[in-house]
Amino acid sequence: MNGDHDSEIAVIVEDPETVESQMDGKPYVANKFACTLRRQLWKQHLGLLEPQFCPDVNQEPVTDSMKPVGFPNTDHAFDSDEDKTVMDPLSDELIELWHGTATTNESVYEDVFHTVPTNKVKTWDEYSKYHVHKPNLTGHVYDNKRSVRDIKEQLTKIRGHLVPAPTQFLINEELREFDVSVNPLTLDVS
Image (cartoon, rainbow, N blue to C red):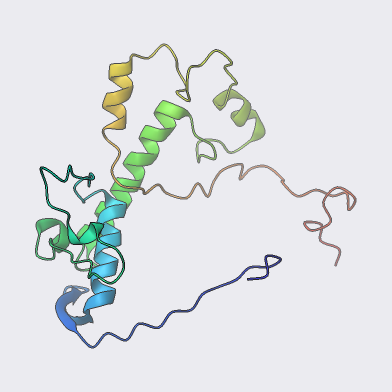
């Protein structure tokens, strides 16, 4: 907390209230707070939540989610189809959905924006061919000859926030410096 090193915050939540759930295809009793928090986060990461807009006070009521601290933040969709989708964190269907969502998102981002790092680039030579600097581009779209319609159609495929970690980026390159004066932290001096 002094600003010169990492800090952590530890929180203990004592929640005696339980709910019926599932774990690895079997019935499971979970603490409500932890279960609800995980489900809500997973629905958000998978793009399963409806968009939430600030309502016009003359047209729509203020929901629990919009109220300040002290008001319970109720998950009104606890029994929804989306909630049932994320109920069992070990189910094959959910794991497949998780990976499929991440892979689709990655594909769209790479196609529209040519994002780096990417698993498509394993050497510096591949990097220079993949990530060509184009000074005349408008915005961040990689190919300025694409139609706005095509770009929007691609972007509508994105769900949630997931993308796989690009673990193969520059894997065929030696990224360690050998000169101690340049990078002493990565040099193996043993």
